Image (cartoon, rainbow, N blue to C red; front, side, top):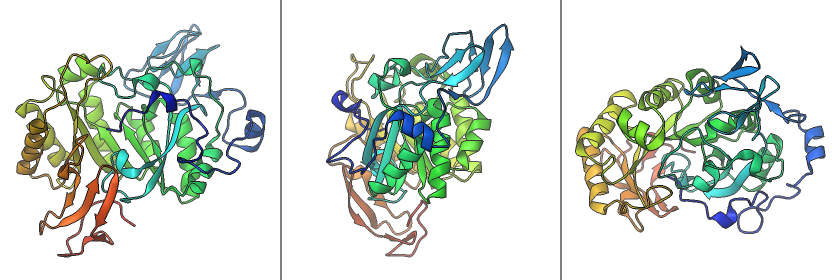
Length: 377
């Protein structure tokens, strides 16, 4: 999972210096609305909702299917019933905008060593007790006093920063669906691939529409029981598994992140069942990232995940037959290297987010010629 964004940077919307050199990136709101055909005039009406009578609306973006009274917001906080219509009140209002290594998503089989223009708005449709970005995921979008940034400006910023991709990340991209979709459509026209880091808690129809504009997605498969999802995330496992199947059918490259939390989802049974499901439903070539938990948000009383637990999880995945199993959030860990599943040679050497060596050429191992699954130049 991505590292927590420092609080001091959360509201830095027009990044400069170290992060971005975006000439003319900051336009005022009135100019943005006048120039950008994708930008709303006022508020952006949401997609995937219907009139439920008596001033109520029902949202069908995610499995919650919130029934929302007039003047109220859905569970995600980002969609509001205003006079009997549902609006995406976070549209064009990013609370985080940075250039990251693609490895931070983490996506290890997608354009290694390249930059990704990364964006998030406030809000989330889950309530994970261990959230690493809770300052913005649990933030009310209406209380985030940030500037409007149009879809066109995002794509322009990505190009001028030299980023290979645009990433929807940090919070839950599902809750800024309309903004994400508009950006992704424009990016595709400009030849910029889009990627997503998501919990996968989204309904099938909107996911299929979005998938047409996605190159890759890292999905948090947070655990492998309904009890875990209910207790720790206020979500559902079945919905996430269905999203993974949909992405696979839509030919979006998938990588999985599983944050292993001591005493919560770290049993051999949970890890075995998770790995077996991935192999049987997504394929053994699907990369799995077992990530180390650190005490965070509402789980401050737990200890960090022992390294031995992560190593053991990797061994389980490999024994089941997964080709690419990684362990993350471990400084200087060799568990982030990509190894050829055929000849066993080192393909990609990583230290942190840096790629030190890459022996994949045109999607093949340079040593034995084996095809290496992923999205390569």
